[in-house]
Each structure stands twice: as C-alpha cells, then as structure tokens.
Image 1 (cartoon, rainbow, N blue to C red):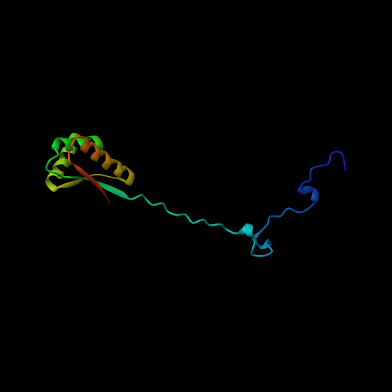
Image 2: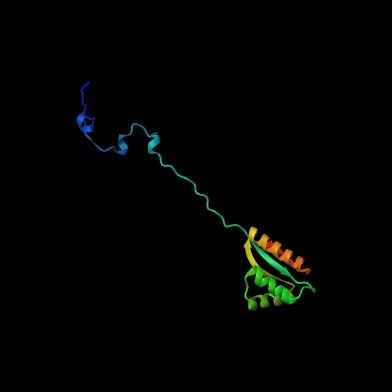
Length: 127
C-alpha cells in the first residue's frame, strides 16, 4: 500500500456522472421511491359546559351578587342583572367553561354558600 493513498473520488473512477431518471429504475418496486403519506387526525375542541345558578327563596340577593362578582369575574352591574334573571326566571347561565373549570366553579360556589349557611344551588350541564 502506498504511504499516502489518495482519497477516492468519482473522477478517479473515470465514470460518467449522469443524473438518474425515473426510467433508470429496474422495477417499479423501489422502496426508496415510494411516497409516504400520513393521515392527520383533526383535533376536536373539548365539549363545553354551562354553569347554572338556581333560585331559592332563602339566599339573599346581595349574596348572589357577591358570588357572581367573586367567582365569575362580573362587574357589580353585570352581577346584579344576572341575579335578577335568576330571581325572575328561576335560573341563569353564569358562564360556559371546559369540564374541569365548570366543575371547579360549581364546587367553589357550593362550598362558599354552605360555609355561609345559604341553600344556593349551582349546577353544570353539557352545552
């Protein structure tokens, strides 16, 4: 072997460099030439849940307004309007959330009402 072998290049082989074309394949089953397709699944939005506040004859209106301001981020005017809707119609949707958020809001409202000895009811249902 020579002391400093030259690196082998295509020029050293004296072969013509021609680009390969589709007709140069020997058969139609070349695995490198196949096109891979990947099916994409479209992600769905999670279902939403309505949080409902129910009327009762014992919970003070001011307490309901406080609940709406504290747990649902309403202004005093918004909370007052929703409280009147609950009072007149028997219930009102106070927000629409993902399942986990709706479940947490219902638990917070129910716990807060119980701690203050009010029978206020808060529920959730799928939209």
